Length: 217
Ligand code: ATP
Image (cartoon, rainbow, N blue to C red; front, side):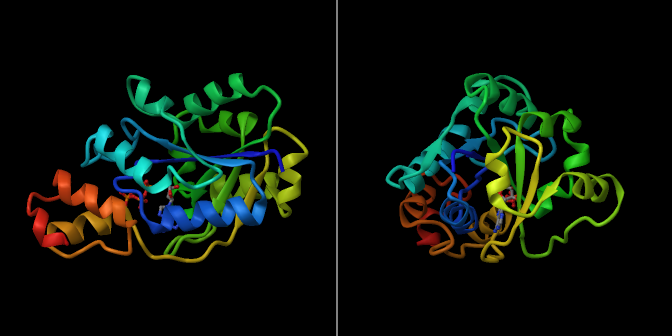
């Protein structure tokens, strides 16, 4: 497969839900690579808790030795809100004919119709939607109609055109979120095994979620 997977997120912090999802997509769909794109300022959510530098440092600690995983800093370098459509446009100019596949959890896909210029996205990229605990496939409304129109059922179809299809793909369901991890750390509970060990070390060393560094070990 030649499609490039693009995994946008706040990664505040990167956790096993992200890592397992990207691993399964890389292997099961045979993506050429998965690019993790940390956002600078999320368009919808409140500002990230950890600084961009620390989030990037955690991404490097979790991903650097993993074949097929790449960190793409273009949103961190771009001023203003990190709109996905701007990111995909910039990747499209770099890879004019290559299949691109934006990776998104079902919870985030459910909000797609609120994204900046969301109608332009499928002209630029495919979308791979992964199941996530607590989030259902939209059956009605704008997204239900979009799925009826654009859904593909075979990953091989993503390689037949550069953009335009939506693939729903089941990954191992891990009920882990960055919000829960930050809350745990705030309560002095260890995040160990929900994030990789080097990420635990960075959280402890920087105190990015809690200044009680020793309490989380
Ligand atoms: P937060 O709790 O702060 O909103 P998050 O855990 O959802 O964070 P993000 O960095 O916002 O993490 O997510 C980036 C992308 O990864 C989103 O598309 C999201 O749906 C997806 N994602 C996050 N956690 C999981 C998970 N456990 N399983 C599958 N997809 C996930």
